[in-house]
Amino acid sequence: MSAFLPVEALSALSPQAQSMVAGAQALSAVQTGSTADLSGAQGIPGTSATGSFGRMVSDGISQINSKLVDGEIGLQKLAVGDAQNLHQLMINLEESRLSFQLMMQVRSRLLEAYQDIMKMPI
Image (tube, rainbow, N blue to C red; front, top):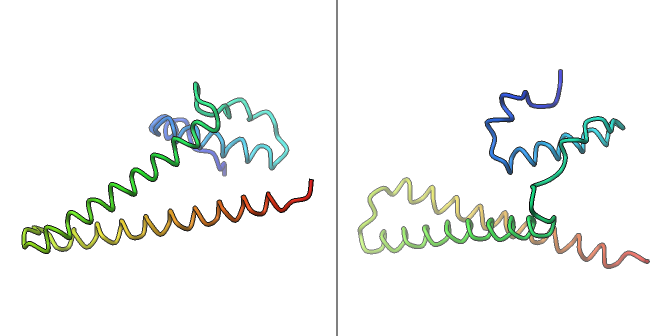
């Protein structure tokens, strides 16, 4: 059984997802010692590694911020009695809370990794 996606499934993915799949396939090839499958691991064309990482972080923070703002607007509507769907409001609030917690965990892990690297002797 192959761990790789069939071509039909890969073509249905977004370009960013295709890049991630290609990276995972390249990592798998490196771990198994095969370098023949490395031709698809090129990254996103036209961007540098730091530019795409910075853009990814910025987009993630923007998405989390919009979820938090939507939750705040929903709470304000609930406070004045304009909330139409309490169930959906609670789902949105929980989703925004979990997204924020995930972002804080990722930030903590990145800071720990940075501190570990800075402690390494040269």
